[in-house]
Image 1 (cartoon, one colour):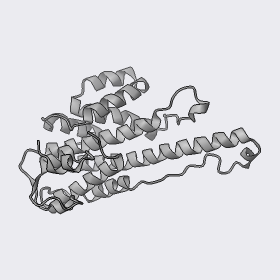
Image 2 (tube, helix red, strand yellow; image 1 turned 30 degrees about the vertical axis):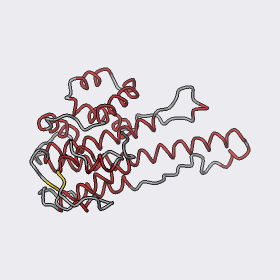
Image 3 (cartoon, rainbow, N blue to C red; image 1 turned 60 degrees about the horizontal axis):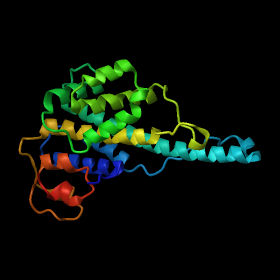
Image 4 (tube, rainbow, N blue to C red; image 1 turned 135 degrees about the vertical axis):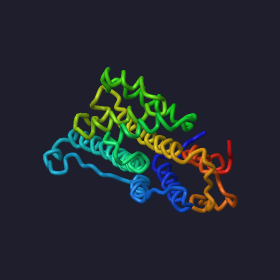
Length: 258
């Protein structure tokens, strides 16, 4: 069963938040969260030219080839990272809205606590596999003490904790950027790591929302808020949407209940 791209996954989550607000299910104003997700869904291209101001590369064919490959790689990396940043911002926005304002912990730890205390059902389908894939690619880049802390986290919180370590590496300038494979003996997984991290954050948002609004018999009375194909006439249980909006099969995502 396939999944939507990270961008479309972001868009579906954005539309569901619009529906939650429209139906009066939430007292929170998700306007800023919706905007962050809208930005994430719409990232099409980011262009990096690594030697933009170095005219000397034009006298050396291999230097030009290297610059071209590096620019393409870093452009793709930057596109994934920009998308990730928007998704991360939306998650922090959700955490800020659903956790106590007087909680002085970081947004990450507020989210970790909220998931541990309030998310009591099976994880969103696809989350565990995404976490396992990211762990396999990223574990060698995380300290042993952080890995030990990770093992003590609840399964629903492990993804957020692990992704927060990647984000810290970028935020503090401690992560090295990849080189083109031809010039680097090690295969670079950086782009895939960032994409997988984005997916895990989207799953985490779904679980945060489920912990807040799930299992309360909330229905989306106006399915046209997310039903592009106008297939739906009857109200849809919010729980079903929160668990399935990541699937690329429309009938699994919307029409087929558990």
